[in-house]
Image (cartoon, rainbow, N blue to C red):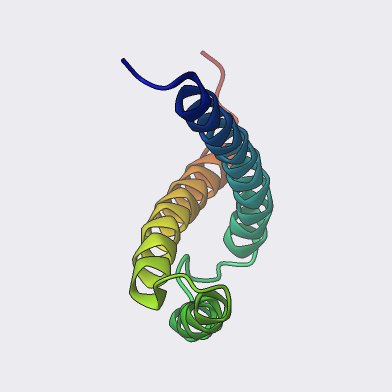
Length: 111
């Protein structure tokens, strides 16, 4: 049988973890809202979906932040690379959508 004090302590940690997970989801949603706006701006001005120099800077920046926070910098880099790939995928979709919309804008034929 689990000691009630340990059970309560475990429940408290798990509640904190659940709260942090919820905050992470909301922060990621806000981050993707911003990156979507970047994708729209890039598409409007025919800029490439990926920016390798920016990505390299961000990875180094995040590795430094992770180290300062006592988080494994390799884990932080893998996490950011996962997010970057998803952002680029979104930017490519936005660019394709803008390109498709621009192609249809000149179509004045009626059905």
